[in-house]
Length: 319
Image (cartoon, rainbow, N blue to C red; front, side):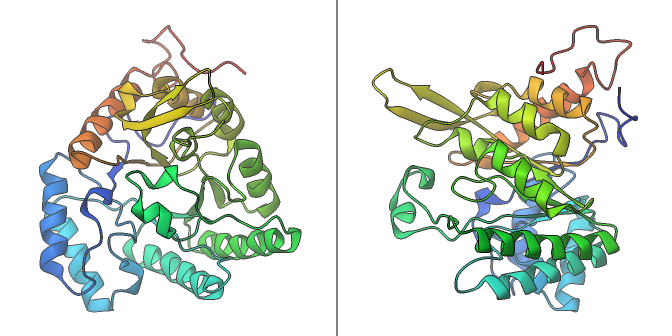
């Protein structure tokens, strides 16, 4: 058994993703407040201002203070800041994205935020923007070049050391066709980074949704759980026809292919002690995120890892 977790099930930080709201104007506090009021109205007490919605790291000091005040007035904590499609090895913007990543770390420190999430995935392609579900079309891939991978390791390590100096933890988001595109590759990459402040964002929903063969979700969790940090969680129904055709569709945590009760308990058994972010694409995304939050909190409340005296049934994934 690992050390006691830092939060009770009731107090565990579970942030809402801003995916349902698209992109908001950098200079429109009224729009920020309208979107965040909906998040609070859905019962959330925490939010992640993912930069696909608002780049808080690029707000002037007065605007950042206004954003923080809006969150405070709505009762919304900010446990983490996620970045999206700002790869530090982008062939054109990589250096600029690295500088931006350092600004995100500094912004997190100013806001008292303990976690940041980075990824190596690129911008959506034209085909992805045209598709109903962007993951069904080919996207940008990380090159099979040892020198580029070494550059990625070096730049992420630099971000990790910066974060560590400020008491912040970095999570690296798993995503297809990147150096974090499988469980084995993700573990190898974070091991090569070799920085105590850098862990994995075990967002295996990004992989389960692919219309191609993928490793079983339970195998991914077994490999990655010992390295898990700030965690994006979502689910998909995955259907595999014997003919070789695979189809997927977004689903609530409770109703998809991934057994999140087993996944979370496995991570907890390895000492997982970071916030969660609940996500969903399509439909009433905010409503499904709220359902996911409640289900996740129920998993924590019933966890045999957190409550060993009252819960005799352990649903961890066996090694």
